[in-house]
Image (tube, rainbow, N blue to C red; front, side, top):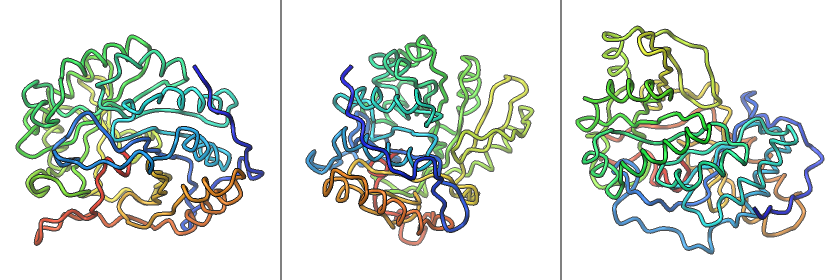
Length: 345
């Protein structure tokens, strides 16, 4: 596997990035593409217009930006999309970033995927030091799966899950709770996931991007779902943290772990340690804010990391305290116009 040449590390190696509210930024989510082989109804329009390839960061540029963050104290990298595993030669990037695992500078390199390409890439991911992955899966019904994803094949995803677990990857299933769509099968999804030794995290639909339809019709408060599950199962609160926004419980009857991500009904910003870089090099300090810093320009302006480092530090200095997520009921507009596939899932 061809390795991407390493960039010179900044002299500030090991220094934490601190935002104005005293939160250390130790988790970077990086989108490597806005493209996806699905068109999930809560994520994209069916006729999405994707970015021209010249606007995307090269794999070398993605490596350089990730490495600059690692040098400044980021301990966890998550590769996202779109669907990250459809990016050409993407395993080259994983292979190169794995050097930070080998050196001890990075605790975890992981990926969020729709599972469609896992059968092809699971072994290579494990060989690059990936130990656990998130797989987005909202239903176990093949027809409903195709309706939600528009193009997806559930059997292909299931084959990918088999390959991932066969390669020794720990899998967490992410399911978006959709009113009137999958709310009647969340118990079945929980028992299936836990029966295979996989965690399950439920996520409230987020108001990002124009889609076909209205999100107010999709939104399902997880407080209602948790109350329903608590009537059937014994939910034991856990202090577990995986670096993300989920809050976890142990389901006594299954022995498995269940997470809740509630950007709409419970703001999780007080402990936010995350920032996101898009496939075009835009650094978003908050998923729910439009403020962003351009990292592509400094990367392309100089072979030195001086401009890049300065842009990162300046951006973190204006990370906001919290997001502005709200579903606009009066005008049926999303809180933000950009799609989740652009920012990185």
